[in-house]
Image (cartoon, rainbow, N blue to C red; front, side, top):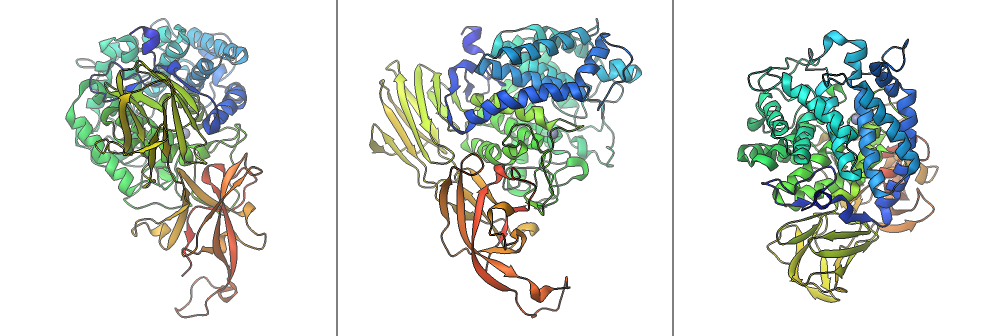
Length: 630
Ligand SMILES: [Zn+2]
């Protein structure tokens, strides 16, 4: 395989010995329209130029200029991990430039890359906080220092630039820094593990790109060092915050800071893909079940607590007080992608889908220049997306995931091609050129046309989402039974010919869902879903006389989906029969003996919109879970 054929997006599993699925060459998937292409266009045209201005305004670029000696007389500004925002933004620009050349973005990125190059010290050291503000603190505080975290984001950006554009400027910087880190840490050198995981998956990717075994060994070392208390107690008094309470191979739960936890599991999954060590995969499986069965919001959001930005106890899933950081949703997507590559099992793609369309996408406003850090499932009003944050981890993280969306659509293996997510796109892999057409997530018909084929028998596998139990499959218009051996995927093997079509029909009737009875915050309540989307009630869509906090939904009557081109850039809205409560019997009381007068109620039609689109019309009240009428 030539480097260009091999070159992948964020993950290159084509040479990973324990990957069941191979990621595709970046240029072999091209979005051609639809839901995600529209978001990529906003990302490219609005978010990335906005990010560039914010990085200037908040001092990120000046920090690098100070480290490079290009300016004097200013102070370092921001958090210790301020450089990582620049790297995530650069990673996003690389993918967007591969999607579509853009002279303006290229010029912005060239300036930023030149700053990063200039800021690097002769010994390879690079971290503007420690170069400018705290030279004596370099590599002292591994718990909160974030040097390895920043290095990891540099490595990922560097790999992205090489893969997406062929540009190796950042890769040279990254390799010098990786060499410097390797001179300090490892067997026989200093024992340590980073307070904020990230460098693990980045080192594995740097290894995949360069085939330098020291980078894989170093990732292995940092993973092995975790769980032995090297980091000490966190500011919250626990080792769990850092996932340093138990060795990685013995972990069975997801705990502590959610982004740290899930960047770690993503890195451990990467290590498994290279080493095949079963104990790693077994631990990840235990942790996955703990998260999905006990600690996951309906939106795919994770992190129940503001304190420590952390996972809560099992079933501790508040709607208003949850954290559900946008970065934690992204971390979950990154981890589940690696689990999918390791196992080929659709449940990981299902969770990616839930998170992508809901808890991740709510992190960015429809205008592309406002961002949520915290994504609650209930707001009494007053919560808007700011333009940026002092701690701006989330906005550029959104940008890099949106820019690289095409990477996650499809994979190949020895038998053929797998389609995991649905969007209008062309896919060229494994001797098959495919055109995918769909109005997903609004309509459930996915149509694949074979545009080119070698004539050899190949297996085409299409994921049947977990929310769909009545999928129908047609080949050239004829109904076919999907291969029952491919759990979670409808698979057809044949000698494909140009012009062959495959249609997957995924009925998208709106549905009501309930939560496990132990989830206290949702007891007696229902939520609306349709296809991959979670819905919410926003005050803006209801009868002005109805307070969205005082409604019930009628579970006995059908929901009605209606296309609303005028609303929120075009959405499928759902009308639900329900009631508005008259709470006058409760006037002036918070509690009362059982048996008092029931609130009066009048029938209303509730209007639900996709959760991702909330708070784009002012900071009104919103709820995902709605009490069920008795
Ligand atoms: Zn964040």
